[in-house]
Amino acid sequence: MKLHRSISLDRPLIVVALEREAQHLHASDLPVLVTGVGKVCAASALAAVLARQRPSRIINMGTAGALREGLSGTQVVGCVIQHDFDDAGIFGLTGEHFGAPIKLHRAGPVLGSGDVFIDGGPAREALMVKGIDLVDMEGYAVARVAQDFGLDVTLVKQISDSACESAGRSWSENVDHCAEQLGAWLAAEFSAS
Image 1 (cartoon, one colour):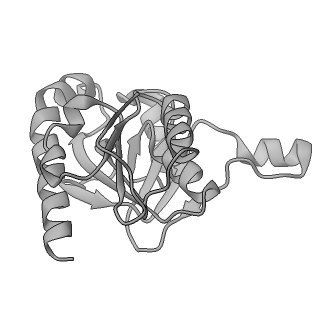
Image 2 (cartoon, rainbow, N blue to C red):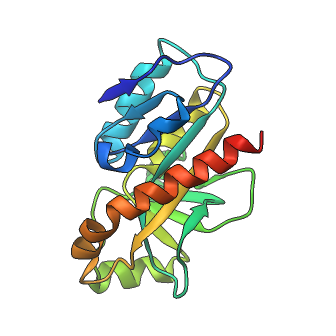
């Protein structure tokens, strides 16, 4: 975990998994938290930071694999779920939900977050059947922690691959371009405000 710049109540906190994804976000001069990969790293790092200081809101940015044909570019997520957590099964046992979908304040694709890199096969097919449009490894955790702290959250994902057998190679080849596109989205977002 690494926090770049100080957090303040009047500015959003940008949250990303990797320094490579953050390389073009620093031009904004906003605070950037680099959490590490996966839901546990994201949740732990963000909760630790928010326990000390609150920003105006959270913007989670990063790469994602597209499951839906034709989905590309920068996507602002409308709903996020944990694709590797059996919320219905846990509800059946306990009568409580611990991983319900999080609907965000906008229309947009459905993001499925899980602690596995999706690279084709039966896992990809199963996620498509669930109506998931794109996949990442941190979005749900960031949204859940933001929700728990009463903060508005926006999830912005740049499509890096199609979550198929060549996803690992595609991600490696595209991550720098994706980082540029995320930086351009952030610059446009804050030049309009």
